[in-house]
Length: 323
Picture (cartoon, rainbow, N blue to C red):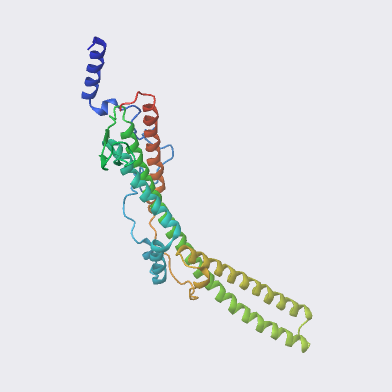
């Protein structure tokens, strides 16, 4: 063996003995530092100071809509989880992202391939000096074993990127669920508000119709001018137009709720119940805490980490193959 080949073999053996983590190329992800000051320029509130934001999107949110105490809303919110089509799409993407972790992790193990084959040969009788026939068969079962040494960390970076994408997709699923639940609650209360407005306008139309009849009777008796009749008729027509607009809005909100819970709008209807609920008391410090629990912010941070892993994957492409 030549000295050059011996040196190359020793170099490869020494490289294989090194920890794999020391051979990974590309930068490791770390949360970027944000410049902080000792005090804010604006004066803090007199009762308490400012609070540094701490992400807490992993805290369970629970059935937050139950604070309104509406059984009909509770029943509709339960249907969103099992019947909404957009939510099913987001759940399917999350399952796909989780499957990609196992798919990319398979590259860390050896690959075994085989190609079995069977051949059969039968001798022909139409050959000279041949008095009998015979058949021979060959069965081949070759195996091929290949393994890639992840010296530059390409496989590990790929697995890490798939893991970050799965976490971001899980946050996307949580974002879609929260958005759909919030949209359903807003449409539901808008529908209940439209019920109340429609009931009020219907009563107003009845009252204005009676006032128009009374004004017409007074005009016929000579106790009121024609302008009073025209004014009463204008008020009645205007109120009827408003009642029609509210009915159209009520139908739109009802159709939107049907789409959110995965039902055809033509077969879905809610009984007209006026809005008489009191909104729950919201503490002053709650909005900032809600911002800390937003899953879309967590998804953006995870995708930044995934993009950081792509740097190492791209740099590993410049390195010589390790297989």
